[in-house]
Amino acid sequence: MEINSLDLAENRRRMLAGELYYAFTPDLTADRNRCKAACAAFNMACANGASRRKLVELWKDILGDKTPLPPPPSDPNEEETLSDYPWVDGPIKLDYGIYCKFGKQVYINSNCIFLDTCRITIGARTLIGPNCSFYAANHPTDPFIRNGTSGPENGKPITIGEDCWFGGSVVVCPGVTIGRGVTVGAGSVVTRDVPDFVVVAGNPAKIIKRLEVGDEARKDGENERKGE
Image (cartoon, rainbow, N blue to C red; front, side, top):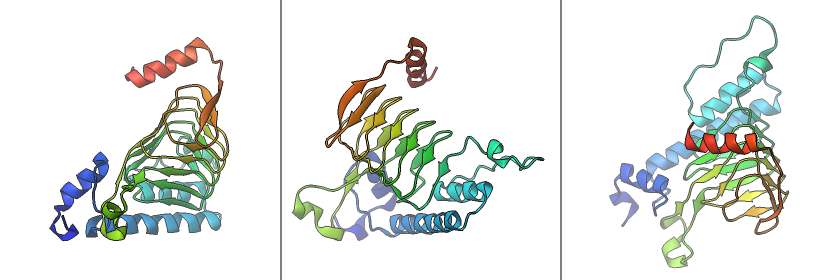
């Protein structure tokens, strides 16, 4: 099927569903360009030492988040007013932005990449070191199907639990789910799902330690997954 003959809404549905789709349709290209411009504005503001409020506003622009910020406080403690919003040190790159979701008090260090062809979800209080990459995008391994920029691609969602810590230069591959309270060693490549409360490292990342946490912490994690 040629790109020009595709129904654009169906093509986007395929993208988000992890099915083969075409990335260079006018609507998806426009969405990536919008995000690229929003990232450029955010990165420039970071480099110029913009205020916390300005950076949060620009971050929300990247994500396409239209909800208003709380009003400025009467005292100068702006950090407390905005403490639940992610703290992001630029530069940063996202493909679409609108398909990423970040929990409260997430920290993202510089030079991180989020290829949100499918949805990327980062749990609350997760800390992400510099140069980390989250690849929800994928390509066929058959080179004749892949066919450069003329062929289709696909992806799988990435889900990261709460209270995780990623060392620098970690790569998370398409379709990976990482549980709550996980530590990922620097330089690791995570290719498969990771359970709660473990330390993983290596390429591919493997469990090297199981964390001893209280029963209440485990119960809280189970309740959150059940929506309680």
